[in-house]
Image (cartoon, rainbow, N blue to C red):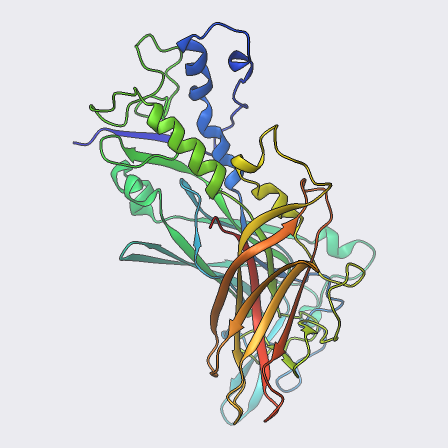
Length: 443
């Protein structure tokens, strides 16, 4: 049987002690071993937000407080997609977790043949579907979270001073296949190189304040003899700490022929954690809670026309300006790589640059002129990444890699603006979009 090691990552950990490795001290193996014993705690930085949706500043719910009159409320069973994400490569040892907060759900409608629309009771659900892919194997895990119903007439929202705050519900769920986590051999096969794509849908009339889908550290499991490693496994077989080692090597060796005594594992861990793990800088959905058509089964698109660059949400024509509205890209500061963070690095005021992949879920409208579009992501006049949208009418994820400016620290404000233009005005083409993602991606 293979020799497996497993380490649970969601246990509390302390920072690795660095003092034993300071200068002007005798070189001793036990000091190095003390560092490696807690080295894998850096994986806790993998809590990346992968998708989100909700009220997000909207003034009104799309769920009415009034009595049912025709198709005046959402359908009681139809799924309405409000957010999608492309396939993200998860941090090793992580699975996807969703957390949401919501107010009581509202009234729904149903179509009764020969009688028209009628109230179908108070109901609200949020469905999250996670698709994990590892090699040629795909695991689709759906989960539906029910939100308590409003007890007021017509399923109305809470009224009165502070009533909405006092009626907030919080729910969460972790998406991991039971057959993966219950046996360390399966966990070893699914602990690394896994991608996850997410779809979030509303069913009925949920009043969702916020839904956040993030990756969560769970456990590491590796075949000692054959696997590539992400972290030093200075632990017993069940994940416990070995304490002070009395043997000749500071960490477990990769295999019997690893003459370096485990140093290869340490170097691999430092390189991969420092260069591969980074945040999703931005996630945006065209879903507009106050104006969304509840009869649509997908987020209502927003569109851009004309050959001049226009801002994607409001449609205004302007060049990049830090004085105008946009999204924050400050989390890019958390994606700085090891080779960019040494004490000898040249600090250029508040500027830092990170490699990114820009995604947009959109399509071109039909026109006789075979139009295309260009979507431009900017964090400064000199910091631009562009995604080309080809001719066609089908919605799909389009992406491009590039580099964008961000701050040196997460507290440095960074404004990200996204604009688009069509290649021609002939035939009145339009570029339509629903979801946008900017993610740190090592190049």
